[in-house]
Length: 146
Image 1 (cartoon, rainbow, N blue to C red):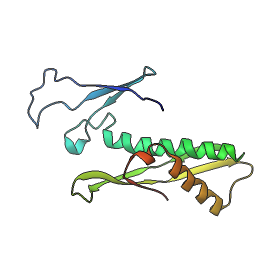
Image 2: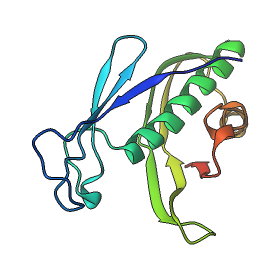
Image 3: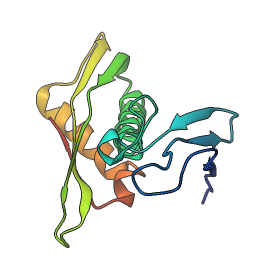
């Protein structure tokens, strides 16, 4: 088992505190000393510059899938030179009628050095990466690889 800690900080500052006017900007502080500016999505009156929780959720799914995929490739002695993903999350009402990120589609582009898997083996690797991804195992969102 492991534990993962993030400190999230917000303060009202000089702003009024009504639904339409309160400031949604806040910070995420990670144990490695990195601070990430965050806000609500602009749809929910947030600042468009910082990262919003929905983007962070999609990024964590994409990142976990990538890291798991790279581990699988390395164990198979397949050398990856680059891995880029354009991950897209969809916010919609779930089965309970509540807003949720109901689907995340990953669009990985992989550059191999030398030997590379055929299409069927690549699909199996992505499927295994999905099954072994800690984040994907923690959510009900449908995650697909396009």
